[in-house]
Amino acid sequence: MDIAIMSDIHSNYVALERCLDYTHIHGIDTFIFLGDYIGELAYPERTMKILYELDEKYNCYFIKGNKEEYWLNSRAGGEKAWKYKDSTTGALLYAYNLLSDKDISFFAKLQSAAELSAGELPAITMCHGSPYQVSEKMLPGDDRTIKIMDRVKTPIILCGHTHVQSKFVYNGKCVLNPGSVGMPMLSKGMTQFLILHGKNGIWSEEFISLSYDIDRVIKELHEAKLDEYAPYWSMISEYTLLNGNTSHGTILSRAMELCRKETGDCIWPDIPETYWAQAVNECLF
Image (cartoon, rainbow, N blue to C red):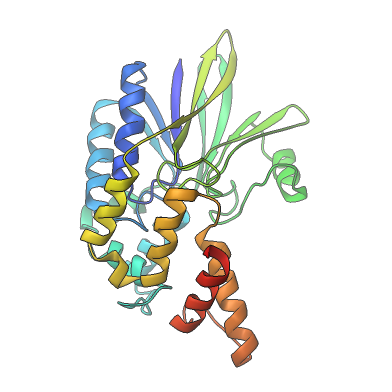
């Protein structure tokens, strides 16, 4: 039995199509998706169309990520501060405006964590951040990761969120992160996912990295005017696609630090563009 595990697509349907082409060639018919399906990049409806069609033809398991919580909270009236021409929230506004009622209903049915049993093979825990919090990072060797591994009953935990492919083994248990399909870090510009091979009662992992048409993704980012919705955020998206060594979160933290230093306080999402400009210049150039 082979399972393809994909996470953090972030609307990069071009990369998703590349990954799926690979799985189809290799005869894989079971998929696990670990959340953050849209956001950051253009035409989120194209990503959702692909996922719906895949779900109709194959065995698919979908987990909720932190992005899905954003969309659900906004629909429930909890997010009112997203703005056009705002590097902090403009990309969220762009994606949310293109969501359909079907998308919201789909996200609302997703679990934050779930277990998967596969016959005689060891059971698997699936989550986005951690089994206990969608925005928690399970970093290899981290004390918190070890505590979570001690609590989880299954020998394998699949997680995403960090956008970095990784494997961490501790006390007979294993945490596997497939990396990110759409916005991978430390991948040299390649889209990434993971295949689990199940044979003779044992799972073995195969990390996959594939080249794809990044220029098309960047062209469509500008075509959709995402750089107008979220100027510096989109600049970081473009840089990350090409280089993959500086995350949105890192630059966001720096922008907030600069804001606090000058104003005495900084509460997300109220981060003036001037601090985004400073942070981008420091971190990217």
